[in-house]
Length: 160
Ligand SMILES: [Mg+2]
Image (cartoon, rainbow, N blue to C red; front, side, top):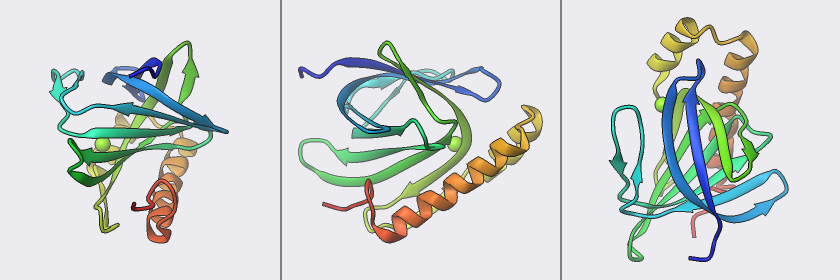
């Protein structure tokens, strides 16, 4: 693959390490940066590596409080669904994509059924790590925005 290698590095809001992995640049479109990962690739976390079973297309926007990971089964096995992480807006620099994970996730099935998870982590960490009120509001608004995009079947939730 000729695409440029990048590194995705997420922390928790207090700066402690979270997920980190290599990802390959696909395209820039305004505030959107798209990268891909491949099935069989090891993603690192403080709990140890996790080998992803999915080919994944990652969507990062510099002006949004979330990212969207579209997951496909390898070898043309089809759409598995989307994993959406609520985060601080990402920063891009010198091949590095960084952001703070804000616990809340939205899991979207191929039929566009959506579920919000990790409300308990969000409640706990917002106290423990003293999320400012603005951060809590932006995280909540991010979930609403994601659910609206899913309901409308709008990109990147357009099923092909
Ligand atoms: Mg989470």
